[in-house]
Image (cartoon, rainbow over the protein chains, first blue to last red):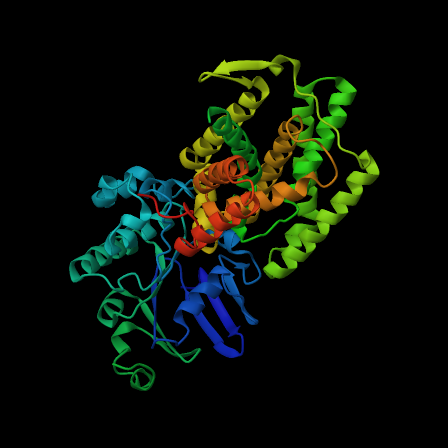
Length: 232
Length: 285
């Protein structure tokens, strides 16, 4: 990993009104790797992803993607540079059909409809259904597939397995493993530690707006910071 | 009875043309543009001048529509765009101010008297329909409104641009996070809404008369349409316009003493039972 990482965040600060949510976050995501961002509720994981996407603005710090400073860019430009976003809320469009979700923002190099339907036969069955009528698992598949139709180089995933039945979690996990095997770069916020540690190449532990530990998954449980900053 | 229905429908279609832009613009950006009625008036006056210059109602229709689209687009780029991040109160105050500027400008340019815009010779006279004889031009107004509604429905529900607009109404942030420039989408919708307001102005010219201040009454009615139908929704604007058109028309015939209040009673009832409007933008079956 001699070349610059695909994504690097340096000294990122974010304020919401008077609370200082991110207090100088540094992290790197090298191309072709999976980085898991873990930490307690309120540690700043979601805010980190939103700041990378330009949805919330940092008050200080830099974000570089593919060699470009993007911290001041508009969200739609950041997305077009090649970052896909799967938010925690899933943000399905209730007034769009499944198929419209998948053609809305499709770009060259992204997943085609055939590819999505091949991978998720369930979405193919429900192609005419309204977004709001989908089950939680179907919504999560659709959110990931929607992001992949834009042809991203980096995918930001915010708790993709949260609130899903174990069987569905396994289905989503299987598809994330397939993405990884294809060489996709992922930055994953995950509460499910067992899954995160088994899947990621690197783990970044956030605690109260700062990075408390960074390292390989194998070393995670032995690190003293883990006990201090993560309620297990 | 049939005549009143047709009258109500004719008013409804005018209100639909005027309200649909207002409604979708509000749904997409939570942006309140009270000067929408001013663009209706602008369309009517430009249409009037065009008829006087060319003698053709059809050129007036084109010129009035274009004038409102262009002035609306310039207003957006020069002024309204900056208000987007501001509070609704500021939007209301600034666009309310624009109403008065528009009113004075109309008085200075076109004078302070009412004039009827002559309708097209082709549609002069009356047509027998459903057992009544009804002015042909008014039937044209109804047909035009229905045609525009059908085109907008097709555009919004069946095309990719339409899907982008609906996605923007549902969730602006997520739409942007997919790489879609929501500001540009909004501009297109805003200008289209202004064009339709201008079109409504020309079309209303032969029915109502053209005068400085003709925008005030219809602005209030179109706001009622947006509230009743549910902001951001094409179907809502359509159904709201029909309700308001019918209540206005039948109210004045059957209950003239309380006709003025009837509409607000309807609005209060809708707001009490369905605060989000009758057919708000949202989930698809």
